[in-house]
Image (cartoon, rainbow, N blue to C red; front, side, top):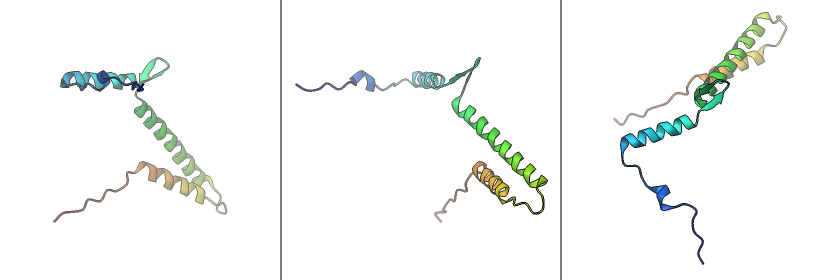
Length: 100
């Protein structure tokens, strides 16, 4: 007796109509939204806003600590934090090799 696969052939039927495919993708996108308080939010957008907010808070905190530090106080940790946050937010360079 052979085991039957749990996936049926109908699960693999391609969608040939582009408009139907587009509406299916939009439905999938809307299904992946997060319900927060009284609104629906895009997960990627919300993550971006939270990362941006935390980054700005760390930058401002580090700059304030550097400004109010005494001359004999070590502030290298704050410069390291600023460098890390700037490195996270700036995109890495992409080198394109010419085929000349």
